[in-house]
Image (tube, rainbow, N blue to C red; front, side):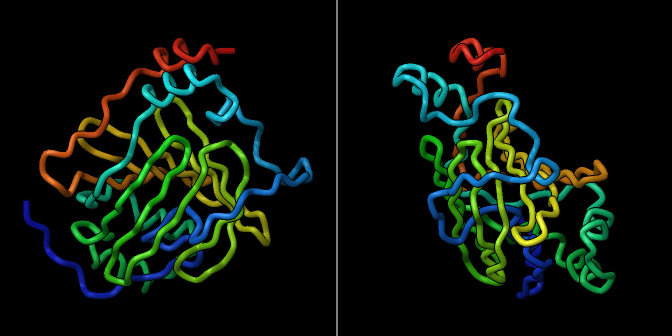
Length: 230
């Protein structure tokens, strides 16, 4: 399948750049801080970390959860992206330019290294290459936007077979769209939801022919294996 190459430039949309919707340029051990009740994230519904499980349980959970490792190419951008960017206070001219670029389809790549509860993502775009690492443990972590270095806070957590990442500004604590990363057949999908409920999706396919992501168990199977049902 051939893709038309987008113009040789990339656009930055504040700390939530189009080419990177989560992650830290350099991971630092998260510090657990006491937040005001009205500014904290909602309590997590179920354990997100593998660290407190016995070895056998941890192995079963890792087998049940998806592994995103691979080299992925963006092949489709679904949803009302113009409204999505408008809700993020992106101006008309910038939205028009991003649309002309096809929202990165056929150009943007992600190289994912996923081991246990650590996810390392290398983003490759016309602007350049950046790498981010997060630990999937349900703990708020400080992150740095690789495009302009502004601080954000993220909480990565498993929700069933999807990796959910909540993000917000580190200075104002204003929440940013929530990302869900999951596998659907041979595709990796990143779904972003705004505060108003607007949903857009980016669909990736394995760049190397013949790549087959790990098969997924159902959510029920995963809960049964680990005994985490409440």
